[in-house]
Image (cartoon, rainbow, N blue to C red; front, side):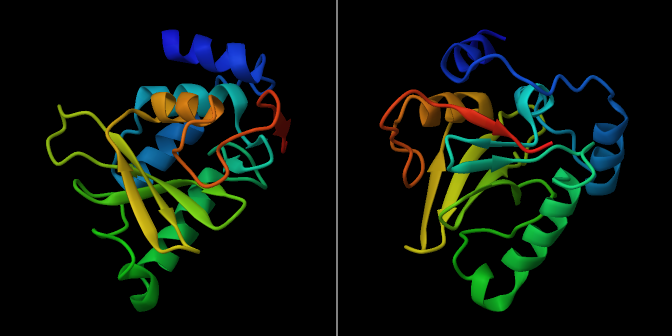
Length: 170
């Protein structure tokens, strides 16, 4: 994937290198959705990680920073009455819903928008809890992450004083 090569060039070589598909199979069966290949590839390469001190990305096979647990907790939070009204749609894993997959250190949630039509591309959206702003991005997760690493305005604090970096959380 060319975008992953660009991510590696900015972020450095990944340190996780997960290759067991079993955690993904369990997660996808539980939520009834097949995660986009680019999201799985980035997560398998780097996950669980804190990127540039601003973005948490978990992995379904990790005991402590487990993506499945984070998704369940986040869906529950975003379905509560006070939180749900901040989203333009329902948090969840059904077609058309917003699947929370990552968090920011300053109260952001990164969602994957599940397409209604299985053939349609997935997209990304960010809910900035402090401002209440919900911003959709018509791009894949890998393209969104690349924009984040380049310091483009795709999340609060996505500009970096120096080169992007990551800290392994495993």
